[in-house]
Each structure stands twice: as C-alpha cells, then as structure tokens.
Length: 403
Image 1 (tube, rainbow, N blue to C red):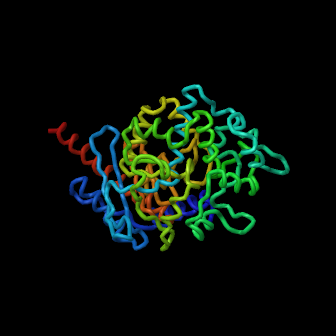
Image 2 (cartoon, rainbow, N blue to C red):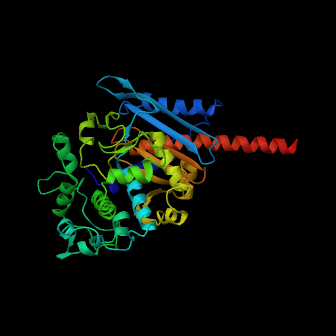
Image 3 (cartoon, rainbow, N blue to C red):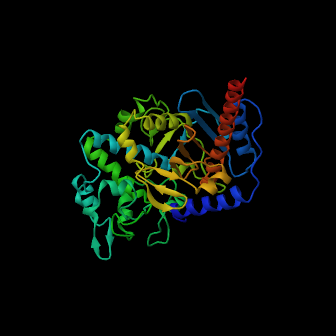
C-alpha cells in the first residue's frame, strides 16, 4: 500500500484537478427543506457508487440552530441490516484527535509536558531502538510533541513493508483472526528504518500514537479505554462510543468495512488498532466530541489553538497536533466549493471536520478504504447547501431592510 501521506495528497490533488476544476460546477441545490437536501446527498452517495455499500453523515451548526444525522445503504451484509444514524462505525485514525486531546488534558493538569522526551515516561526496553537513523539511536530524545505532530521520524508499523515484503495491513488481510498486541506493533516499528532526525520533517506514522497511548497509561496508571471514558465518553454522554472491544456497547457490531470489494471487517476488530485508530463511535457522537473540543469544553482555548500548529505535510493537507488541516489556494477553493477544514480523516473512509467559515461540523463514514476523496466530495456538497442557505438568508434580510 502507498503511505497515508502520499495517498491523501495524490488522491485529493487528483480530485481537485479532475473533479473540482474540470467538471462544471453543480447547479444550486433544489429549494427543498435543508433536511431533505441532506437526505438526498446521502442517498445519492450510496446509490451512485457501487463501491460504497453504506454511508452515514452527521451535520451540526455551531450555534445549535441545526442538527441532523442520516444514513443509507446496508450496514452488515451478513444479515442485510440497514445502515442507520445510530449504527456504530470504525472511526479509524479519527481516533488520533481523541488521543492527542487526552495528552493535552494531562498537560493542563501538570502531569506531563509536550516538550518532554517520551523516555521520561516509557521504559527503555519499550522504546530502545524504535528510532535508528544513520547509525544513531534517537529514541530517548523524541518529545511528546514530535510524536503528536508526526515529526518524530519513527517508521509506520502499519503500512511500511518489513523484511518479508509485506505491510502489517497486508498481514492482517491474510490472517484477520491473528491477534496483534500494541507491543507487537511497536516491536515491528523497531525493525523498520527511521526516516529523519526528529523534528526536522513530517512523516505520518501510526507508531507515534501507539507510543502516546502508552504515555497516557503510564501517567494515569489506568488503561487507555478507562482514560477515554473518564475524559470524554462519560462527560459528553457518548453512550455509543468505545475504544476497541472494551466499554459500553462492546457487544454491538459496527458496520462492515471494505477494501476494494473485500470485506475487512474482521481485521478491523484486531487489538492492534488502539490509540492510533481503535475507537468505535457514531457519526453524531463524533460531532458532539469535536464541537465540545472546539468550544473549549474539554481543554482550554489556548490548548485547542495548540492543535493548530500546522506543519507542511502534503498539499493540500497540513498537520498540527493530532489534527489535519485541509486548505486549498484561494482560486482552487473558489472553483471547488471546499472551504478550509480542520479535524481528521480515517482509512476506513471516516471523517470528522469543522469549517470555521461556516461554523459547521461534519462527521461520518463511507466504510470503504478507497473513499478518502469521496468523503471530501460529500462534505463539499454539504457546505454548498449551507452556503446557499446563508445566501438566501442574507437576501431575505436585505429585502426586509429595503421594504
């Protein structure tokens, strides 16, 4: 598989060029009710693409004036159960936004500092040799901030190929029932070469967030799922959200996930998916989390702002602390209808983003690993609906003021 960075960048650039710029701009949405327009968007996303078996979308406005969640397609093909607004889904790497938020909660409590080395909290036998570059072991110099911003240079245990010529993703596909532990994933990264001196570049690596999860457990003395429950799930009443197979709703089956035409749902339940991508949630509860985060109800506003310490990654994406920033040049943005977004995407086609311009939150999934671009296209349609609504409100206000 291609690296996440290359995949995101290449696919989104292709979409910008081929879809946003070469295709004619769609007509204005019909003058139906807002809810009906969103329902049509979700239904057409599934009906118009055979590769997308299901879709769920949740939309919230920041001022609380509108909230809606809708779904279409088949959630679980074994029993042909329909996709619903409450169907749990694998949110994959959107989990990273929760993990880094937990790190910032602990920093606010004085339990750790982003600029401290991970070696202060993790045993040497766990981290020794996890970053070797040009004959030097930098493992004890890597800071928590460098892990959270993907600037450590540590190899990606998940998508990089080992000496056997296979990535862990490919091994999981071949043996979905084999159990991989978090320690196994870190050990695998130790067999792969590091990419650069820590802090000098950006390279997306799931290993970074496995190590952050280990730091959270070391600092709190609690398992990660219990920390998430205490910090987020309970206070925000996220009753359908859990980490892995532990916690409320653990017996409920998430919607199926596909890689191409292959059902990979069984492998998504592997214990290897953890602080880097192990949360199961619903589209609405993802939005509830992001809205609380953006409003400073989980961490202080200055901590929220620290998430947005953007570093160059791969156009049109930049990376902060556990957070992606999608921003096209002004001319591209005008043609595409895509405004700047911050949040995170996941490899299952999951997405959780906020548009500051529109004061809009969007979350959901297409449960298809090859649907990362399609998620942005889906959000584009949603933003166009809200832009049209805003223009209509302004026109009505102008008419009233002139009468």
